[in-house]
Image (cartoon, rainbow, N blue to C red; front, side, top):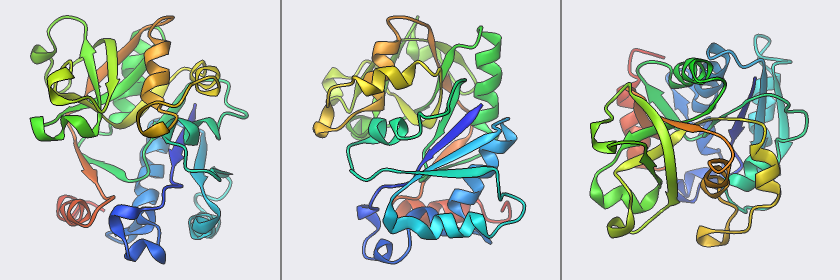
Length: 251
């Protein structure tokens, strides 16, 4: 299983600090945040880690190449245009033949390892794709990809999984199918890459991973998993401070 960690974004929500240090390299305890995410992927069973970076983020490459315990487990591809998450994931397509575990580089999760649990759910459902979910308040619905689940989404609680029947990228509140948002973790079949290669730009004029997953639904099952852990968004100062508090004594 290949793990793909997109980390090429410009970090505009964390300026001016990100002019000199990528948000993914901000420390969580003694480790950069992206190191914690790599460890999550390895613990979930990934044997190939692909970091999607930009030329401005060579410090990430230097960091991992200097770690003897991780050297050789991590490789790098470059996203030279900022064209969305789907475009970033597509850059890592070469050499991926099995499932692709996608972990956003600015999303840490406290509690049980969501990637490992998603792998187990996939195996229990014939290798189906799985998307990590969290409930969000109404004022945040328009910030995320929102899913509709088979049956009653309201009955799906932490630790539950159900088949996804639709996804909408950053909908208006009145148009959202639920309050279940895609939360930084995906386990996708390799078929996602051919869909991304032909995906037309969506919200914001970008290649949206959510749009490609929606097309994937037409040919194979995709499950949503409401993971019990708490996602920590380190892409902005407030989220980073909350992450430091949440991981205090853990890392």
